[in-house]
Picture 1 (cartoon, helix red, strand yellow):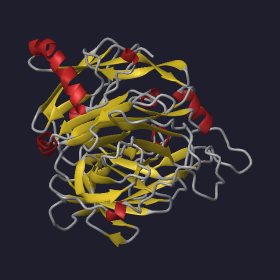
Picture 2 (cartoon, one colour):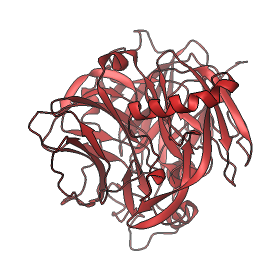
Picture 3 (tube, one colour):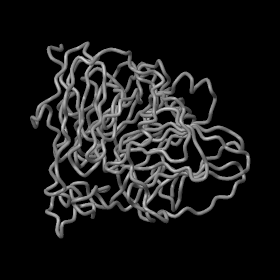
Picture 4 (cartoon, one colour):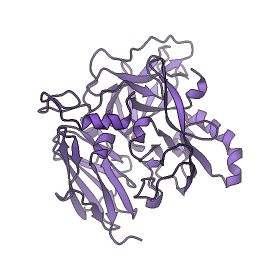
Length: 464
């Protein structure tokens, strides 16, 4: 494959160098960086596929900034369709959040939009279209705000964007999901009485645009340390990150630091991120980093290779189905910078409802379908999400970081996140401080659940 067709960001160092090359062209715009929405070609299963992409003028996809930087970006839409970008995990002023018709108008073909605000919070974030079903057409890229600590450490960093791929058009996928099931089976092929792990039977999973038939191989030091910045940019797939016989240390989740946790398996629901420190043992072995699809044998991944190490062929399908993604690890996570202790001023019940039958989903607030969550600036707000369905829902709140405070009646001082998984029949409570006035999207990050109705807003009363 032509290397120009593999322009996805693969590491902070490489992208920083590409940005430096582009900086001379940006100086005329006062340091403004340019991101272009465009079409590109990738190769999947030996065939070329035309999909969307986000690239700088240098060709580098995604964006890397340092903690303390100003987010100063112009998005140019070179596509033939209306589009835009949402800055997932950043907390900008609400008019710059990139959600069409809520934050502002979408970007028409041939037009551009500018964004300028403090790049906070630092950490592993990402960007994606919030217009229609474009996210399934791979209109997404990494967005990294490198922490001061990470910069000072001098550790090698590797960014991996995991995505799910289908040869079918997204609109066709949604149409099929809405067809009545036959034989008592849901679209994912599970009996309606049990949990359903997958809505969509994907053709491939991708890691930085590549399948395991031709994975990205990253050269690392024989006894070095590597910080993996892993992003689940899938449309509707929960993954488990599998380091095999090796062990990693979880450093942050959704870009927010947690107390270090060692494991070889790390759940990563749709839209979530995990920063994992991997220490090479000096034995010369390559280390595969796999993302195994929940309830499926399909998998994707990259390979960390000490110089001169052999690389064994890794099949695109594993020997067994990927494990269910739940909250067993979630209850162990502890934020290193938790919310300040204070009472909850407002508790809001949010139902997660719907059915595979007819493929209709909703998230009634106070038992009212279509109602927003309303808050007052300065409040400590608790969202009580109860999943009444047989599918897990990765729930994302824009413009805020929340702390997981309770899982199925178990109280905890959990991780700070922007996306939390709520498994079937589970109840998860999160808390946040209402400190960013505006109108904010709040939804399930399974693209097809959101499109079928699992979407509402968070609205500040009396904001200006």
